[in-house]
Length: 419
Image (tube, rainbow, N blue to C red; front, top):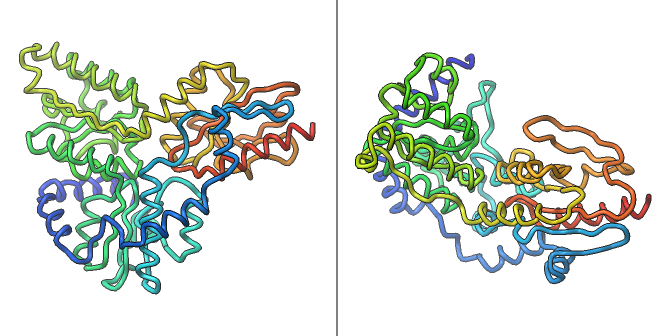
């Protein structure tokens, strides 16, 4: 199957899901004795294990010292909000509980539980497996049986996947972050009132794929630049085929920019930059006011606050940190983590040399770093830590454990001490 055929298949699946009574499916699941969202009574033990595996005494010491630590020529400045959020701690604890509750059953996950390689590797060692993919990049749910347990990750799963698992009759453990569910509820309201959902996100990201499956008509836009293109089309019209080509793969089956942009609702991938989501929402609101008049705006525009608190806190802390005198920044987190990437954008936007790494193994040998350039590939930089006194800013994405950040800090001290 080629790319065009794949997009057609996804669009047809979405068309079927848009006709599905998703609320009826949810009610059916919640009344089932094979669907769980709140754990199995092992919360204390799971939380203790999580803290034992992922917390760090060094990180706590830095917190207690006003988020600063100096050693030799290095001063570490730690962001005041970073690392694991409540939702991530919840999903890992629920996963630990699931294995304890089902010690011998085969357990699957529909996607990475969170975007952190260390955490996902730990789950693999617990014999929790990912649903395999076929050559076309589609999940092979045929491996799942009625006796199996399937975990839905923090990003959620599409409504089609949930319906399929419900039909199989397996046990479902739903760890979807409540903030993601809040976005889905907003999209459901868009659908109910015949609004097209404008989703600020990355159309290939698991969360956005899941969110769009709850919509009827939708268009995914990546950034403010794309939003401006769409708004210009709303006001002035344009080449329909060019529009569809520009957003190929990012809209619902049958989407028509000439008719489906008259009534829109704003939604977002919860890990996007808060300020950009707000700018996009205001841009669409102003555009529709110009098109239809301020008195008619409530008939053409719908918006709810669905920005994740944890994402917002980490971004705000990063904006505060880059106001200080920082020689360079290290951002720790999975390379496929959207919220981590946006933290990197903030540092680079202030002209601060910044390095995105996913683990301490990216440091060394010697004064070398292998990091991921923004929206690009891995790059090796020699002599990345300059001589003399330096201030290093540190932050991490919401899926990154404290002990990984601690390992990075200790390695930075070690590299500088050896120079």
